[in-house]
Image (cartoon, rainbow, N blue to C red; front, side, top):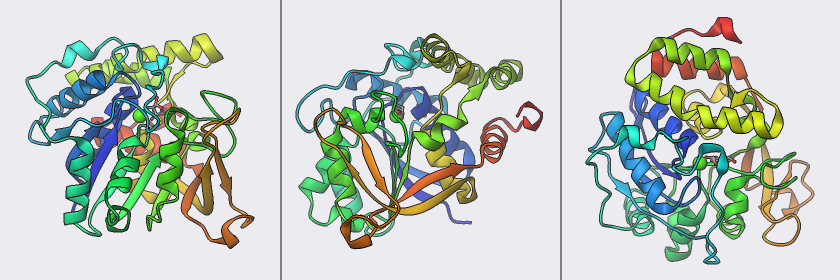
Length: 318
Ligand code: BDR
Ligand code: CA
């Protein structure tokens, strides 16, 4: 089977790191490049983490392009506490490497690459949408030349930065708003409604510890701070893995139930960053601009995640 050519635009970030790791272990993805954006850490941090995760996977050959350090409005968003100051739960230093980022900036790269590969590339946006929005602003043909865009962001029913706003959309709501309105032919928004449900539980983390390879120990370590944070703030003993679901969905689309929707993002005021998801045809003359992930097959997801990366069956832990 031909591998799917993809680019991952991300803010690593523990769960972004897991998304890259899953993609690279799947044998089904041809990862052409990674782009960084500020989010789970400052831009220097997410850029360095991205390089080091590629090196950890033995893929120093995959280029990493440094992207935006601030949102479209020039504000630098607060970073996420769930993964610690270094974005990887205090374990970023354990995977230092000599891999360097490319000289070209991520937005320039995205425009050049997508416009010279029309209709070929699936782009993952699993951090704030700033780089993608800038690429759309810079090139009239960029949006039309994307094959597909898979976003981790937003939600229909919940938020994690406010009662209604998810982090990636909250961090740059104008960017998310512009990306959703850009006319990209195939957009899927995978939000908290489903990603909250695929968090790692303590039993699964113990399995990682027992597998005891450099990779399983790394995943065990970088998911520790998320677990602690969830317990401190919500009394839930699970560690978030939001972004991984985007890659899992590419590998096995039956993991998610998606519905056509018209989605827009609130750019200011009390609901700033909220994604408003219309699945009933109230807006835009009933025309949809995206698919909305409504349900997830949690067991199928865990099975795919553990079997693909660690060749372990964890079915008994569900
Ligand atoms: C999103 O925000 C980030 O912290 C995660 O990496 C994920 O992309 C979840 O709200
Ligand atoms: Ca992310």
